Image (cartoon, rainbow, N blue to C red; front, side, top):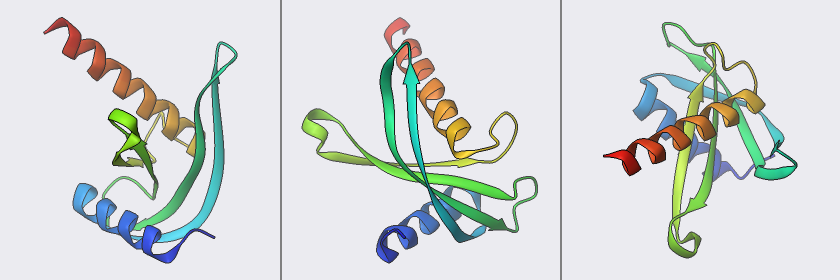
Length: 107
């Protein structure tokens, strides 16, 4: 099981971003590979949601980012199509980040 402080911090982010309460369910390991290369590997925390109008579950995690991995970023993805698992939540996040980077380069 993940650290309680970590879980609580993710629950706060879920509430702030999505306006609902959450209950931790489990930790799921995810290893995402693209063209034979690891693009993401880590653990995703799975939360049941209470009070969200559409989603019943949220997938959340924190990871290092920035120069020398000094910054931390928290991601909280709702289980709404096409997201239906920890793996698809990671894929959706990677795709969103890629699109943002591509858009920033063209502006």
